Image 1 (cartoon, helix red, strand yellow):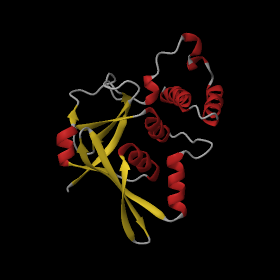
Image 2: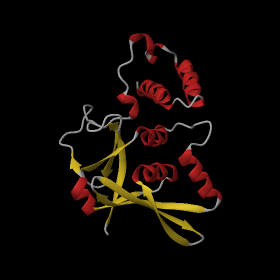
Image 3: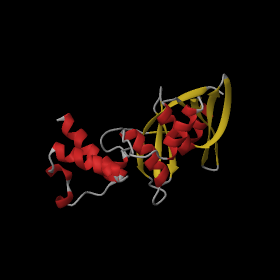
Image 4: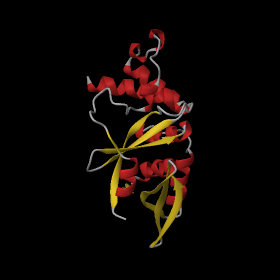
Length: 197
């Protein structure tokens, strides 16, 4: 199988399934995109890592990474190797003591681990032909956004624009401590918006 590297483009609310998200992976050297429907819990595990948030206690994928590192197991790569009846199948290529081992995984878990181990994600030309889509035009109206963008517009009384940067940093720390990652990502977006100005 000729491997084609994928990058994580982002998460968006699924247009086809209520309460679900679309994880969008992009061909590294091309313009095809693969939308993969995942649940809100799986989306949150990916979003936390994409947003650079540090939970006060290890979440499941962080625990898996910590265990792997403790036992000197390296995650070398993730491969999405099959698409059957709308379900993507993935495997983890791990290395331990010079021996390589392949482990079956849900694609959402594989991507969440790939982010934590900073390892590449691959697929095949066959899967890109089956599931790949090309977006005609990408701009700020593109359907791919961070999870924070999916929040409905905040009423004027609850907008974070009225807070100082110090207050926002304090609110961000509180949100992370309370494991309210959706709130934390909204505050992080406000802080990032200010840095760009």
